[in-house]
Length: 222
Image (cartoon, rainbow, N blue to C red):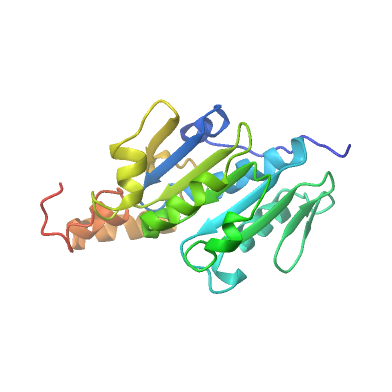
């Protein structure tokens, strides 16, 4: 069997990705590198044994809208092109690992028919409807399968926040992360962060600190 041990660093804030939980939930503002570190985690896991990964979001008009490019870039950055083959709509590992990319809203029938998914990653999950969650969750039924959720919360009644933060239970690892948890946070972004903090502190709290978006909901969720 083809396998290897890639030298990919995962920051301390994301070590919970390696805990055995049904749900792994990371939410917060921009700059925390949620997407990059979840992508790294999946790439690492895919080298260990053959796995089926579903990378999903509420709407995916084309592969360009998915995390396909992010995964491809990380594969290149860590010199894993000899192990992973990046194709137009999938990514395949030499050991049989496969990545698939789907939109949830318009692919309910296709999602329901997917078999043997080891891990699903739902990106930009603040946009996912309750109907989509009700289709997806029962589909991910393999023993020890995982549902990984990443999002920037907007409103306390959004289905994703209610399901995985407000009503979190022992099956879930839930972590709020921000730019401060990213040891590789670049100076350019920090300058942008500080400028918004000075010029528009209400927007700043949502965009960078991952609080609810008070601009649209009357400032009552501080």
